[in-house]
Length: 320
Image 1 (tube, helix red, strand yellow):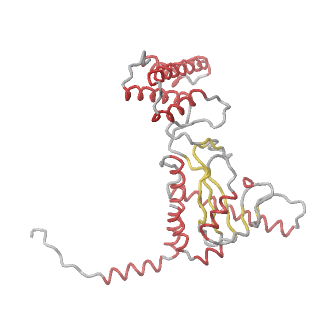
Image 2: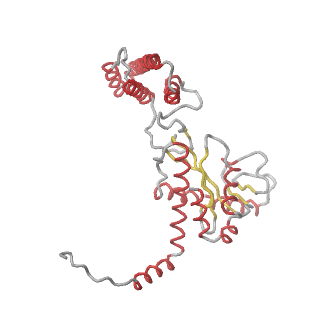
Image 3: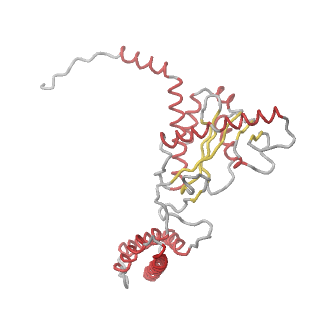
């Protein structure tokens, strides 16, 4: 996918891209995974379903399946939303959690010693049951355990569940010259600029970013421009910096196009590799569409030439 992305960038002309890449705009967004909003009730019920599935697959006869109790507790948890039912809600949640632990012990005792094929799955299920509210590296989805809970400070959507994706684009032509995913909450400024250098072969002089890219000491050889107040700065330099920072806001529209037009709104590909593939393909499609628009006259003339020079075939009689 990275090679395909590089080939699309080269379509714009290597010299042109190297000239424009001297000043890039960088920003991150959240690529949401295809999971439901995680709640304790949902996760506990999914853990119980996994235990039942393993028992059926291995031919294990459980002491009890607790089918009636689980169905009754699910109904209590589903409709106990009023304040007067809060105590019943907490009690039912604890009871459902206890039943999940009982099934866990029953299945593990029958599987002892645990086969290697189940070790990773059982580890994820056990972490779901034992994680607390204030724990770090919590699991929000059983089939996608690497999903993170990310807060971007949005008023309409406080938390998003997925991974962070970073993009770099040029101001002149608006070409995406860098697209990558970030694992965890690591700082990504160094890696993003290194990827841009690798893909384009150009030298970055200025990188216009937001305050999320603050790093002690900066990046060697690159002037990091961000909206911050400097005490020793003239009025002219301050206005120039503010103008450049305002131009960075153009990447918000670019990210919106990637999400709504190029399938980045929800990621259906599995695992960390799926996150990287979806991000690179979205950026590739955006660049390809832009290149086709810039070369629309040439492409249209080629299509017309092909139509008028194509040989005229005689009509075929369907009855013969």
